[in-house]
Structure formats: C-alpha cells, structure tokens
Image 1: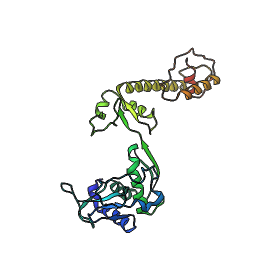
Image 2: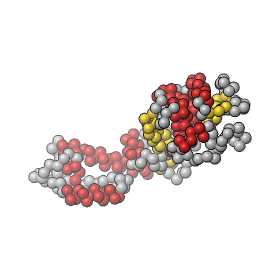
Image 3: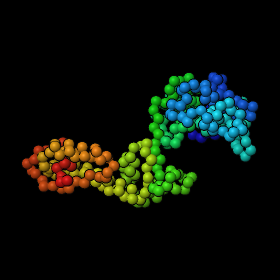
Length: 276
C-alpha cells in the first residue's frame, strides 16, 4: 500500500484533527498537531517531553513539541492539493492514517524498532487516540532491538551499506541457524552479527538436532537409558538457570545403557540418561 495512493485519506484525517481542536494550520500552509491538547496523556512511551523541537527554529508552530501533520509545498518536492494549500503529509500521519484505514479504530499489537518508540510511535498514539476519540489505541507495543555488525555502532542498514543480504547469508548458513541466532537473545536487545556468532549458533543447532534425534529414538524404543536421577536433574537445572540460557549448547555424551532402567518421559530421559 503506497502513501501516494492514500493522500485523500490523509487529508481527511488531518481535517478531523483540526476540527476536533487537536491540530492547527499556520499562515504558511503547514498543519501541526497540538501536543498540549493531549494534556498528561502525551508521553505514554516515555517521550522526551516539552522542548524537543522537530522543526527548524523559524517554524511557526505554537509549541516546540508540536509536530507536522501537513507540510506546505517546498521547491523541488512533490506536493498534493489540500484545504491548506499544496503540500505533502508528515511522517507520522502517514502511518496513523493507513493503519486506521486498514485495521480500524484499535490495534492489539504494534511493533517496530526500538528507535521508533519516540517520537514516531508516541505521535501515532496521539494522532489516533484524538482521531478515534479513544482512551487507548494500541494494547501492546513490541520494540525490537537492532541488528549490528560486530564492532560497529550503527545498526545494520541497507542505506548504510553494511547489511548482509539474505541471498548471501543462505550461501553459508541455513534459515534455522538465523532463527536460533535471534532466539538466543531477548527481542528487545541489540544483537551483534558476525561470522563467528553464526558458527557458534550452527553448533548449537546441531546439538539441538542431535538431542531431538535421541528423543525420537528413545520414544521408538531404539535407545535405552538409565534411570532418572531427580537430584542431578534439579542441580543441573539450577546451574543452568544461574548461568543463563546464552552460555552455549548442552553437550550430551553417550553413557552406558541400562536395559533394566525405568523409562522416563520422552526427551527428558533421553537427555539425562547420557553422560555429563
């Protein structure tokens, strides 16, 4: 869905905000959202607060934190007709309008990069709650950490020319390797990408595959295991919990099979019945 195909919807969205007292046009043909119309409700995602100017110092907005909904036409920029003169939509209003047009007055989950929490998502909330006259537009926000090339401060980005294409990645590693690489960290954490990190993840994936193979063999009766030692199980669990889940894969070693041992739940017995 293209923004350029939805400019009439964006104009109508801005018109309602102006009519409701949440936005105001300026003599220059710009339209700004009036942050103070939100009162204490602005800042749900931890805004930078009053004084975080988005426009140049010569703008004619009323308050430094007010943000542009519609920008008057500038030389060499595309523009569309509007009640305030030719211009183009602001960044935040594009997303609010299209989300409302497609999904309606409320979202359950809204996601995006951690850098979008403020001002972008904060301003989306302000626009949509004012437009829909709703106390809560989105139930949950999931803000993901960025993927970095190890040793670089910037996030991996096509515009920065430091990205690895999926095509190139799959020449060396499998899709499951990357999936496990992502699962090793909290979705909120910044993650460093490197060849060595992917190789470590590949080893972990092989260990998981080996364990699952043993578990299936155990269920089929093709692998005999010793009896379950509950004390050792709880000790192992406590050690792993203290160490965290990112300390590398568990290494299972084949122990002596005990044909007379008790058969434990599938998978658990198969793993614990092997040497440390």
